[in-house]
Image (tube, rainbow, N blue to C red; front, side, top):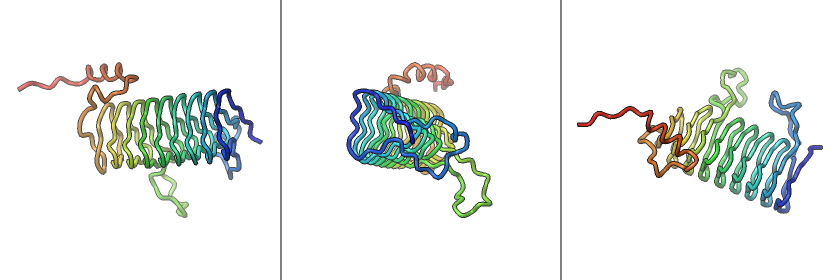
Length: 223
């Protein structure tokens, strides 16, 4: 039976399942890991949600209705998952990050701190469609890596293994197929960099990194 630890001042509504462990198999390397489900201080989990074994929900975070947070995922301090979010497991979500309703977070991805992910965003972790095609083996099973302070508009699609570096803004409905370099605004299908992020668009947490990045940029010749 899965161990469950619940901190003080939590509000866990009815019809919530904690420590769900009826899995067919675990990913390699996780078979002997501690599968305790840890709910830290001041967490709120609304009705209908399922939190699998091995998950950690850090202090003062919020999980909406009918969220599925699969095995060995972590939700950081004061972060939130909106109603209907599915987190497929083995995924880390940083502190002060908001994921809005109906978003799909694929397995084996990383999301930084102070991020904003709009509703109905889709992420993927497999570049090949291998369903009933056992001979296709050359695709690494890994989701996107999203840096600190990234904002992703509603309905965007992020393909497998793509890195979105710190401070980027991804326009709603964009399809991100390649790496997004720091402090860029990306939009389109496929998404391309259309301009640099403006100072007022940078979260406070990244201000010093942004100023350093500005100093590293080449000076354009006048005239």
